[in-house]
Image 1 (tube, rainbow, N blue to C red):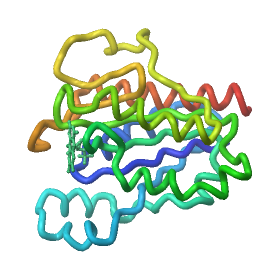
Image 2 (tube, rainbow, N blue to C red; image 1 turned 60 degrees about the vertical axis):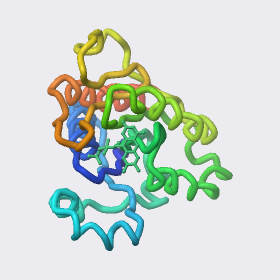
Image 3 (cartoon, rainbow, N blue to C red; image 1 turned 135 degrees about the horizontal axis):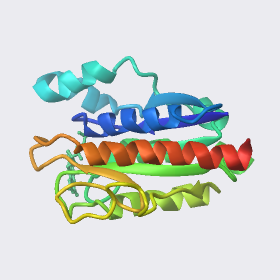
Length: 204
Ligand SMILES: Cc1cc2nc3c(=O)[nH]c(=O)nc-3n(C[C@H](O)[C@H](O)[C@H](O)COP(=O)(O)O)c2cc1C
């Protein structure tokens, strides 16, 4: 049984969250974790060397395989992660969803559990809207959406950090200067574990 963790990250916050999700998936026995990044746009890839921080992050992830339609088809469960762009998912992640028409026609995603995670610059910049607006494509494709219940440690708080019932999240700061809080990473791990456990129950 395969759980696909697929993410996009420019400045490394979602990459760290994705690695935490992956750890959570791997905690569940009898499940294979597959780690993929979303393909970058060619023009952005060309410009990356001009930005020191983005280049350092790029060098950390360039060898992670790009997610293909085969990867999507083969998986039994999914966790999708993207930073926010104007309160919504990135175009890079949206391009991946928009490339699935053939799989949608085949019903390849139907009955498969999926969770989401994100990063925003600020507290009110898309912590809720980004995971929520990622959900319509998941539902169109027939996936079963898995959230983060409030019984998860670190969820009930009023601090300047992530953790939403719609998906795991973190806050990068307006200059991407923050790091994911330990609680954000723990919630990301819990999400990975939960998607893997639900997938095992539904498809094991
Ligand atoms: C074009 C653009 C739009 C963005 N829009 C938002 C936004 O609406 N709200 C917000 O909080 N952050 C916004 N950000 C900041 C990113 O979400 C932030 O850099 C990201 O969460 C960092 O994740 P990463 O390190 O994985 O790339 C935007 C960034 C860019 C480049």
